Length: 272
Image (cartoon, rainbow, N blue to C red):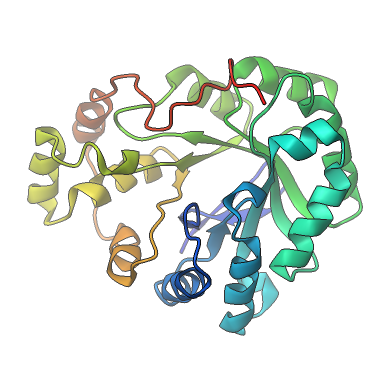
C-alpha cells in the first residue's frame, strides 16, 4: 500500500478501513484482521462510533509492530462543549490500548468550540501523544481560521466524497493549502451503484462499480475509507491498483455530482 506525505512530514496510507457501524466486538476484531491481511494499514474510528475498545482489541490481536499501522480517532461534539478535550483524548487512547494516536480529528467543527479544542490538540501534538491533527467536515471558513491564526495547520480534512456528492471548492482549497483529504462514505452508502456510467466503466475494466468509485477518489489523491466487516468486501475494496481511469472517464464520473449528501448533516448548520 502506498502512502501520502502530510504537511507535517508524517506518512499516511492511501487507503483505509472505516469502522463506523462496526459495533459487535467479534465483527470489529475480525474486520481489522481481514483488512490487515488484505494490505490495509490505516484504521479509522471515533469516540462517537462506540467501538474504540473493540478496535483496540483487534489491533492488539494483530501482534504487529506499532509503526506498521496507522490509527485515526476523533473527538465528539459533547466533549468539545464540556471543555474536557484532554480527558476525551485520554479515554480514547486507553480504549485503543495505544501509547499514541497517529491522527486525531475534530469530528464536527462546532463554531463555538472548535478553536479551544484545536488549542488543546496542538498541545497533545507538541507533547508527542499525537503525530498529526486535523478536522472532519470542515468548511473553508473554519479551515482558513485554523490555517491563519493557529500554530499548527490541519494536516487533513475528512469529508463526504463520492461521485454523486463532492464539494469542489473545499477540495480545491485543501489542495492549495496542502491539507490532505480523506473520503468517508466513498461509496455513497451504496445508493448509486446502479448508475449506467459506473456500470459501463466497470464492465470495461472487469471491475465492480464500487471499485470504480474508490479508484476515482484515489486518482484525485483523496484517501477513501470504505467501511465493511465482511471479508469479501474488504478484500474487494482494496483491489484498486491494477488499473487506472482515463482523464475522460474521471470527467464522466465527476459529472454524476448531484449535490446530495448521503449523510444529511451540514457543517455550516449543525448544532449540538
